[in-house]
Image (cartoon, rainbow, N blue to C red; front, side, top):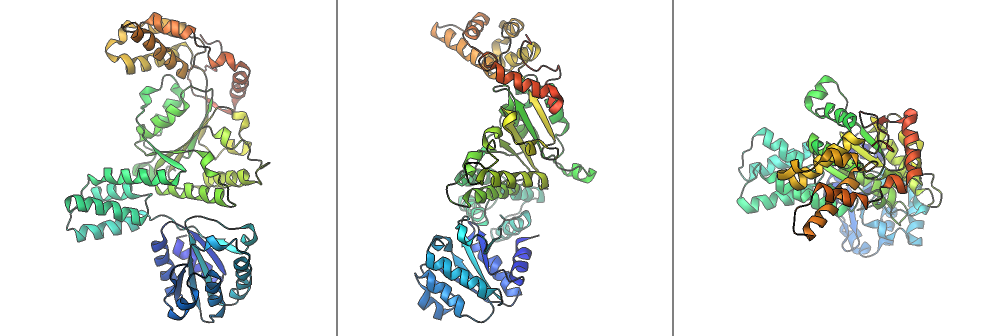
Length: 497
């Protein structure tokens, strides 16, 4: 259901107090006014500085006085929609809260509704049962295309349909105001809009996502070939490379939901998330779940909804959730008034019911900390266990890293010997051994050698030794058949030299 249809239904059902969290105040007010007009109701807009707009009598008495703004609503008998900007700032005032409770009783029997507009949800517990929250989504592709075509007509620019679609796709996830601003910047630079402005839009998108302080727009430069080993996982990913195409939709194929990568630290789980984004040519968003949790009541739930809305607006995309086990290990709600549980519940529901092409890649080091609901079929398409690389995979990993640092001189390194001499090393530990060997060679004014790498490796105590018990428990979990093995040769870890 669209926002306007949902809002119209809410007005007709006589919901007295409505709360719309959105940074797009102007666009939201236009949508509210359209719906109110269709229901033959005037719209009165109030803010703290100017009072009511659209009614000069009210403006004279309601400037800088939120209580008088509510008293005006109380005295008005005719059908109307009252929009109060930034009114969440006053909800903790006992007089305002009491007046809203009284108004809620009165408005139920009248064709009047009070709408509060704010950038975020900030509702005290005392009013939680009375206020209905409606989400105001970011502009969809049709709305963006209409705006873009209008600007093209104004600037007498002509673009191919495919170029227009590329620009529209690049704009998805931005507010209409930001889209207008970045396109105005393009017009100011060269007096027209061109296909090359996609880069300008993407930079604006990065800034916009950064400002949410919830998601990061992550550069995806890693490739599938950068992953050493993990043949089962790579084959699974390559098979789904075209699953987001229009041809896949015509075939009847549903969008892939996501992937959970569980296993030992430093084995390439995060690298895989980046490689998926690059290989599928999809933007990569990184979610720091810790940023979802705010100090104010309702703030965490609001941030979760904002994250979901932004990810869906940017779809198709890859949403990378690193170390999800640490984020939701306390989902039972003990110790935080149930906030973690509510955020986790919202997230689970979205994962199960989402129809937008947001592919979730979650990584976990300790699968035993995850709530069992997250592992249930339907949340992810597949759960893979990423164990320590066996000797063949270690050789591939050495090849990958040495190609990165010494592509011109790769043949001088004995990767067979290196792989044999580094049992139980993870990919991250192999890279660290190479870097340490480079330090040895650099300090002696020469290139580093195979012996330098082995010397560096001898000084590294791998995680397989320092956290042997924890790794054995992970391997037992994987061996029980609860996850597919990412490696074709079935290596689970310890003693695979």
